[in-house]
Amino acid sequence: MYQFQPDPNLARTQQIFQIWIRPVQPENANFTLRATLYEYEKLAKNGLDEKTFEETRDFLTKYVNILTQTKDAELGYALDSRFYGIPNYNEYMKAQLAKLTLADVNRAIKTHLASDKMRIVMITKDAAALRDAIVNNRTATIAYAAPKPQEILDEDKIIFTYPIRVKAADVTITPVGRVFE
Image (cartoon, rainbow, N blue to C red):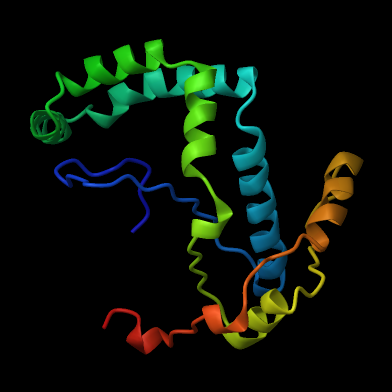
């Protein structure tokens, strides 16, 4: 169910940008959603800084080799490369990453990331209570297991009341028994 690498042989006709949040205690769900939206909207508004861009590009340049470390994966990515009309996947990705600039990435962020196009899926106990907290913009809370630096606590104050712009009519609660129908 959980993966750190995309499966080869799943050709895509459109791109997807996903944010996966690890499971949290239900009492932290309202805060977690607000924190996620806060960080996402900061990214959409400000883009990446040079340091983050360089670190990410360096990581991806090295990580691309891990994707094809088995013969099965290597063959799968070879088929994908042929489907997409690109040369060898590893070589292609490394060459494209080397040419990529911070301006390219920030332009793509500005073009493609927008909160008004977002879909959110949450799995939780007492979904009705969470929906009500979200649509009524109730102040969020967070319970940390360990002390946090003042910088984090200061940012939390912003997140506690960070607005979530959604109407009750736009929220659907699907009972677990119907999820895979």
